[in-house]
Length: 625
Image (cartoon, rainbow, N blue to C red; front, top):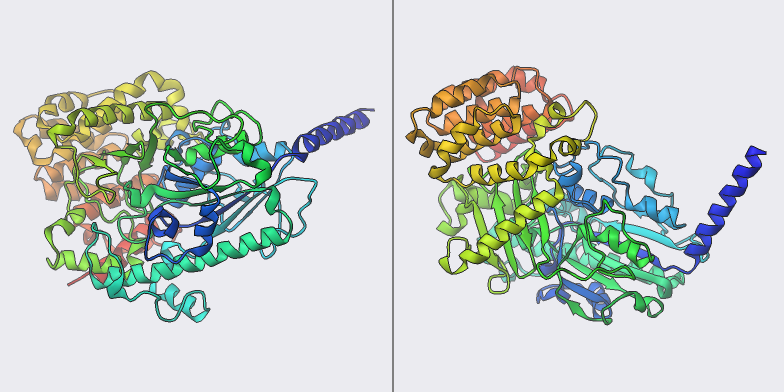
């Protein structure tokens, strides 16, 4: 009897979901990797050859202020998957695969519960501890539109890789030319390409821009084939099509940067006539309201007539449950560790103005990964900097001691070259946007305030880092204020930082130590600085110990600080605490002092310590005079 009852309940649920799904649209996401909107003809690039995407845009809604919240793929995808910011769920560090709170279910789960057939071709890579493929149904990558039922709506993601940054690596270029994916000779002559003004017009960068235009055309051709197949199989009249890229561009100062070249993406949404009532905009309209990846999951549900779950932090910008943008609507941007290199940054933008805050301004702004040096453009730029063969404005990105605050008028300065943060005429705008950033960090319950090496030390084993704020929520605003104070590089903050160094709270000690490190020699004005820093070398948290050692280096005690970092490498630290130590040694130009035997022992695994050692070694050899 129980089995019969269970079967009846199952059938009723199935029938209910099938009935509800029967008259709902199919939704197709055609995504591509590593390109910002300025690479497309429909977004104004006069050298682009992207006819299929341009034609799609001509009959679609074209969002002109769409943003990837993070300028790197796995972190961006975790935001899309959960409808919450990566720092909210603790997935902001590249391929860290840490657990997310159970509350943050993948949006796919909701769609499947509504009766959708959900498939994904090309890439998952969600940066969360889970089986990525388990949430999707199986399909045929070669023929994605075959064997779909007209009776069951589908949701499909097809991810295209022609524009990934690695396609600018010489061996990949050669393979793509051999396979006929791109022409043997670039369509554009390297000397004729337009070089954006934030980059030096040097041969390596010109070469990469020319090749990347060919990569863009190859990707565009792929998009055209998919749209043709969609129509051929009879689904075009019932399918809403999205096209966007996973973050900004592959050439230097794109991917991994919070500038628009790293975060502003195309967002093109096509509504067939049957479903145009789900859009508040006219077909072919260009829309300047800001949207971002955190909005995609709520928007999907809204297109299906469903309200977003409470844990989703985004805004539905289409569909029956659309929410109008607030008067002060901003998109929250974030960057932490991308591959082997740390560098915490946060930003907000409304599409017209952009504010970026560096919480590690003592570091240089390049590189944020050794992986990028597979491109000749990045290598050419770095070598010319090291050999003093650049105009001064192109040296800045490589130098430690970056600007703490950046404020850009994106309308007047779309390439974000002129920082207005120090301009007295914009002091009110700066203060307002800084306050907005603090507000967003509080709303997001930003786990970036917790050093990655301390995740496992501050929450029970195996628990999400985000759980920390469940018991410390009342401390969040004060810690954000301290992080802003510590990163301000203001000598007037020294007495407060010295006081905070003695705190019983680990995160307070960490940020106070960061403040001393960032102040550097400006902190030597107080006689008690060294005596207050030294006890932290015995702190139980490696991240605090190593920050204290780096602070000593910044205070002029280079040999003492380096000796401690080398010693602490031998301690029983977790992977990310070790990685932080390696970052400190690289910044102190002491990587070559790490014993060869230790390096050999720690390059046997597949973790980020191994990756950092092998890539740093390779890169240092590449760039030796």
